Image (cartoon, rainbow, N blue to C red; front, top):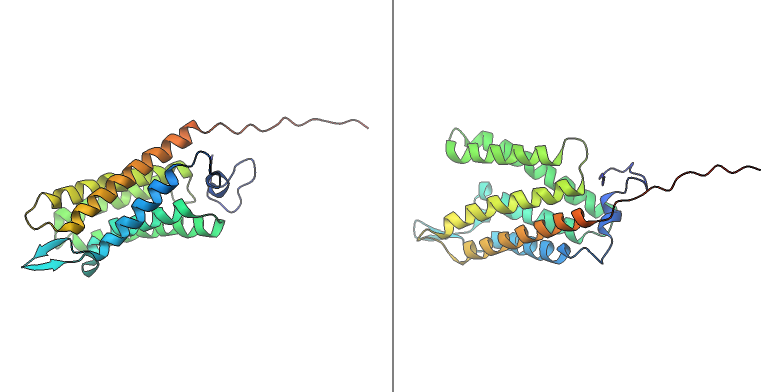
Length: 202
C-alpha cells in the first residue's frame, strides 16, 4: 500500500518515499513533459469559432483536461511531501469542479454535461474520499488521458481544428503512455517485507 496520508509509517510508505527513487521511475519524464505540454496547449488556438480562433482558456468548461495535465505533471516532478500533497489536492479539487460544472451545464447542453458528470464521478471514485494511493493516481492519469484523446481526436476530425488541438492530442497520448508506464513500474515493484520481531533475553 502507498497511502498518501500524513500518518503513513515506514511500513506503509507514503507516495513520497516510493516516488523518490530514480532507478525505476522512468514514467516521471514522460508524465511530466506530457502534462506540462498539455497545460501549455490551453493557451494555443484550438478551433475556429465563427471565423475567429478560439483559445481554450477563454471557455472555462474546456479547461479541465489541461489543468489535469498540469496536476499530473506536478505529482510526477514532486520531490517533497508538500509538493505531492498539492498535486493530489489539485486532482481532487478538479474532479469536484468537473462534477459541479456538469450540473450547471446539463440544463444548457445535456450531452456535454452528462459526460462531464460521469467523468468527474469516476475520477472521484478512483481517488477515494479519504486519502488515495499511488496506483489510484496512476490509474486516474490513464483515464484522463483516454478521455482527452477521445475529445481532442474528435475535434481534430473537424474542418475547424487548429494546431492547438493536434498538439493537445499528441500530449494526451504522451500522458497515456506515461500513465501506463507508471502502472507497469508499480506492478513490477518488489513487495516490502517487514522483518520479524526478535525477542531478546537478558
